Amino acid sequence: MSTAIVWFHRDLRLADHPALHRAAKEHTHVVPVYVSAPHEEAPWAPGAASRWWLHWSLVALDESLIARGSRLIVRAGDSLTVLRALVRDTGASAVYWNRRYEPAIVARDRMIEEALCVDGTQVNHCASTLLVEPSTLCKADGTPYQVFTPFWRAIRRREPPRAPLAAPKLRGPSRWPEHQPVDTLRLRPRVRWDVGLENAWQPGEARAHARLQRFCENGLADYPHGRDFPGLDGISRLSPHLHFGELSPSQIWHAVGAATSRGAASEDAAESYLRQLGWREFAHYTLHHWPHTPVAPLQAKFSRYPWRQDYGELLRDWQRGRTGYPMVDAGMRELWTTGWMHNRARMLTASFLVKNCRIPWLEGARWFWDTLVDANLANNTLGWQWTAGCGTDAAPYFRIFSPVRQGEQFDGDGAYVRRWVPELAPIPNRALHKPWGSAASSKTNYPAPRVDFAASRTEALAGWQEIRAADQTTAEND
Image (tube, rainbow, N blue to C red; front, side, top):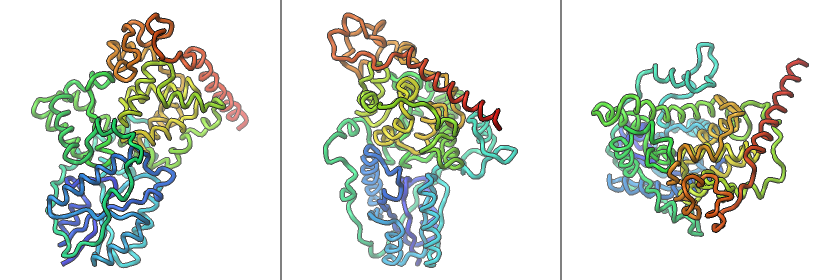
């Protein structure tokens, strides 16, 4: 009777878990394990909001395992040391895990695989996080895609993702190894700033599936329209569940397909939503092929951009939602309260920081990393470089979003701004997104604009012209 260890990473579910499925099929006993080793993810160890989610997701996973006659063995420390100790304590002959794609984790897992194999322990790692392995897709000339649309077309030409796997039956060892309670990992904050997160979210596999089902039944049909309006409940809000692996992309894909088949949504609505999974795939694909991008622009010329100097106070105003632009401030306050932000607000707040405040995009990426419950290194990097115009498939640099125009177009009734910037509630709709100077705004403590939009746009474009001029000079000299 053989024993296998299943090393959980960010795949905190039982259904559609290839590593767990294989281990249960090929071995008599299965020992589920989670190792807390944030130092191994440096310089991108989980931020504060992610740690909060991780705590409750681990608790939910352990409860699900206990209900099936198993349990989650939690340890903290060096991953290889912990795994070797558990192999010794349980007599396991194999270790299984699902692959991750962050550069530091790829290097760590390769080292652990080599060390365990030298020990004589069998290692099996499976594809689970993505629809397509990044190394298996390239253009006709053998180079990686740098534009999303042809990348997505290439995925759509492939066979659909396999059907999701059912949660396997599990049989634990006769004697369980020692473990530590999740609380001992100290993932939750000591100062209770997380009340807003608790009110907004319910981590765990069961809750993820319930949210997916509600969206497919009630939100998918109107998704192409509803997704643009932050004040509406028009999106799935599945990103943190997907990030922590409480859902797999394959499960989402097939749930959307089933909803379409039974007439709950049109093919066009389904395609609009599935493209968002495609962007997630593209983000991981980009990170795989350009692993330096979390800390440096993919387009190296942008390293010469003339950023603002001494921007500390302006950065803090942006972080606190005190810029004087209601749509920007609403997004930043939503983020601080709930650990999440609507995608249109993410795009707008990022554009404002980089192109109107001229603050380096890495400052924004670090803030999102610490405050988002769905802080995914691939998505965070792609989003910020796309907005800054310095990455692959980047928007033209001269595309600078107006907070006023965005507010008038996508929050015309003011529902979003009034929820997150309540001091502006008395302002009439016609002045809500440019409240400065209105009679009602003089009675609030809402700040005046921290930067002049028109002037800051001109300054941002001047910086872009400096880069272009330097590029042309370099090309002429070459």
